[in-house]
Image (cartoon, rainbow, N blue to C red; front, top):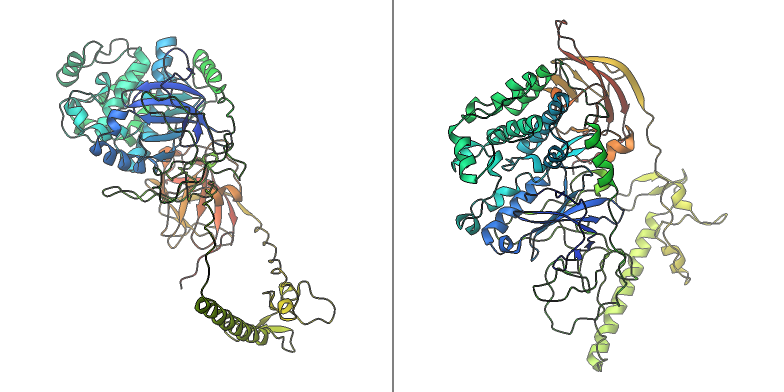
Length: 632
């Protein structure tokens, strides 16, 4: 969706009469902006995390081809988990008005920052371009071409840029709306092949990145402004106007703005050009990478307003017998987006709607079954506080925690004598079968003289545990843990014995200053941990770190604790992390598939004067920290 999270002028605009007050259980606090594909609202998760809710325009929603593509693009976008992207945490592509939720980024867009404060200094532009390039690496790795990379879709956060709205413009490319004159994409930041209606590739995004860099440094588009037709003609046939562009940026911008897509640098080469322009082998992002006036805007946007308190509505009435269920994902009694010409119903929220336990928001239940031609929605992921993508899921009848309407009790019916006899026979059979099962279990649970019990399934002896005798008095025989003993004596069956306490986590083992040379590997089971030629869990190659089959890597974000708990709970898995994505102090979690977990801390890389290529690491290993599923 075009338009980003922030609108020019007022950051948080009050909701207007035609704005919904709630979207799928998310109560809306303010309007953040509007674009060519819909409106953007501010809301919160039940834990207080701000999110941006993007609601698609009704005319797009009525186009079947748009819906099909939109579902595909949202599913692909949920796989994008980069340091410089705003993750998609929730969505409903089947709603009457489709929507998606992304993490709210408290920072101005590049367009807003340049319009208010003018061009950016060279160092800021280089860090900006490098961050966007890293975002494009992840986006392209998920099989997505952004197609609408522009200053309005780049947000400036305190720790770097965030790219938003990746790939969603594709959903509208071949719909009936585009053929009737609706333009998707921003002319001033299109590539020549895009303007000419030719094939769009990742190189298209590189051209747009060059335009974004020129805009940040010059304060105006590289191909000027004016009518769409005039701008598009200049993009296809004329050279960009780069007068005043700092010398350090000329090679970078000029290479990105080549007319021929094949002549443009790949995204990885863009990062190399940024390093060269800054006279560094690796960029280091300082805490204050933005000019002071732009950084001050972040403080303004961080003070996001809370939604108005919702009144508690009465419990929903039971649906009449034989009535059809409501639309998928609709909460009984919850506020929905108002139809044209109808009054807005009172807002509700899953956290306050009923006295029953609160239901989670969209994305915390089982994935919905999608219609023909739709790809299945990926399974739900952890809450947005852990940063990964949360899958789309309905919030409504059948979802965990959702209120269940009580159907009216049926009138009692007279039972025939034959039916009563049949029921009595079934009960007698069940009692007899239960007694037989109890006798078998009783015999299988008897202790032998060595203080062991017989395994009920295999008949082999196993050591007795505290659970076997839990709750028994002195001299009492050990129970079988099922509570059947108490019931056999006519008393009330006792609850199951408590489970064994969870095992303590393994102690970490630390290895300092390991030089992992290109072509060598580390095996977490080795002690001491030393590089070797083959058979390891992680190796260092020409492209960076990679793990073996069954292994998983996660690069931690700034501020995440480098603990075992973090490494166990993170789900932004990959098998490769490039050198260009790591700097001194970067931390990487490794799960090797054999139950071992490690935290790798980057201390540095080999200098150019060294004849060998290597990465220097501190490694902390927790051996046996994960349960390994055994093959059946």
